[in-house]
Length: 356
Image (cartoon, rainbow, N blue to C red):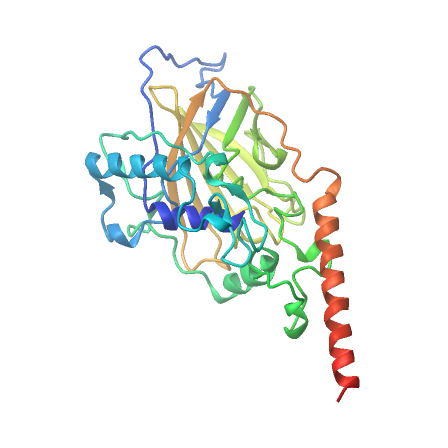
């Protein structure tokens, strides 16, 4: 699924996120006087995480540019692939060998995706990327350690499927040696864009927030995760590491500030590790949407901190169960297939040596 997001951004280019005004919305407050963030939100946005080269140093785009991109996106998601009828409908994800249709397996037809489609302005301007710091709108370069972690932790995602056990000729663990060598999303531990920080993904972008005087819960549609944020508390001991980190929150005026540490060596943020320090800011907008702002600081993964922001759109929809791969059938079959290819390759090589 990682490749799905990459393919979408490459095809569509930079797009802005949407915010619809709701003049009837009134901010509700808790007994303590804080804004009540409770509700369901859709974080799907066409805004790319990193600014496209097409916009260089431009932080904003014009309304005309936004309208054209919105129209092109809608057309892309609805039309079948006419370039190669033998491959079937367009599938985002994988390359020519591992994509959908003839010759391989892949993700979903593009018209099944829910990546966001609404276009509007925020503060009268159209942004060209979610990342706003560094000023060039792009994540800073990763460290050597961060690049190595991604290369080793997501080999099952990036593996090029040739129908043979090519990993036997490579050094180190193979991408399908056992469940632990497969990506977190494939193991349904942490899902794709769910984070934290929560970014827009190819689908399942809904969140439900439930707020009390002592806690805030964020239920993520993607891979069933529920974040529990303790208010006015302290972090757990440094040795306690969790998949989503340990999150504590406090109010600064009408903005909820959430500080997260104590992550595991692999996180829901691709490349992040146990040194990830995440600060998130949640604030209600006048139209009922939620402004989401975050800062990532992980010195062993990126050469500098980076920040981003976009809107979560208030919705009257529900957050449904995400069963991921029920009963782990998918993982079982993936590992079983890998063992089959390994035995086949070793047998062919053995027979080849005997014939010499």
